[in-house]
Amino acid sequence: MKLEKQFLSGAFCEEKLNKKVSFPRKRESSYSARRKIFWIPVFTGMTQAKLMISYLKGKVIKKGNNFVILAAHDIGYKVFVNENLAVETKNGDELELFTHQYIREDALDLYGFTSYEKLAMFEMLLSVSGIGPKSGLGIMAIAGVEEIKTAIAEGDTNLLTKVSGVGKKTAERVILDLRDKVGVLAPAEGTVSSIGWRGDEIDALVALGYSMQQAREALSKVDKTITDSGKRIREALKNIK
Image 1 (cartoon, rainbow, N blue to C red):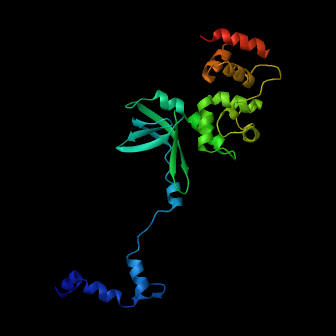
Image 2 (cartoon, rainbow, N blue to C red):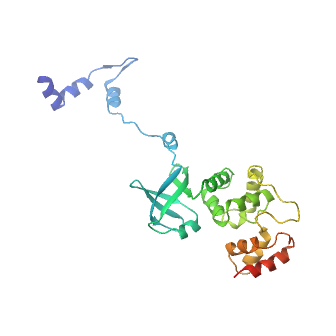
Image 3 (tube, helix red, strand yellow):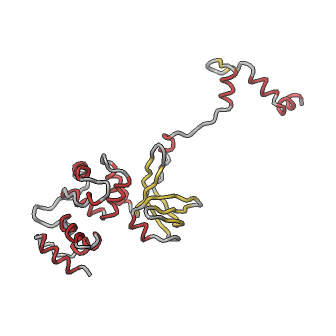
């Protein structure tokens, strides 16, 4: 009973803390003892880095120009996506995303893609010095995975430099670093690539006022045996409705 009263009044704790406290390895002062008793563990960045979010499935509850907020198990995740996906997605849609978790000192961001192949291409781009998540997402927005791989394999910088923030030197670095990793054989000189277009042909159609998507689709329908760019552009114009 006496001990209980002491404990409730705080006298018992104070009495123990004011005494030298013995620990197995060394003797510490009462001040050190207090610090040990009231010490609270804190998660470090290294601990956070191990908790990677690689996949999310849920309902879109909010979206912006370059992100969606995905509700999964009563938790909302803000995931950055390319602008095309953001436009196509509506609030209430069910969405599955393979995600890359980008960790910085002041933020922890998620970038999402509708297939693992797209995620793998994005992470490959991030491995190149000078390409950050914003630039990588921009590249993924203007072309499909096979188109990007083919452009890299062919050494075509025109596709990459269409992205804001990616200059010619950075594009050349992407090609230099990734050419041997993309697994696509470059076509013989004077032939048309497997994706059906060249960068200069895209530029010509865009200069005429057509979108990149329209230009790619029109050129992909042109007979690949036609190798002269001028003829290919004229044929492509016939395919644009």
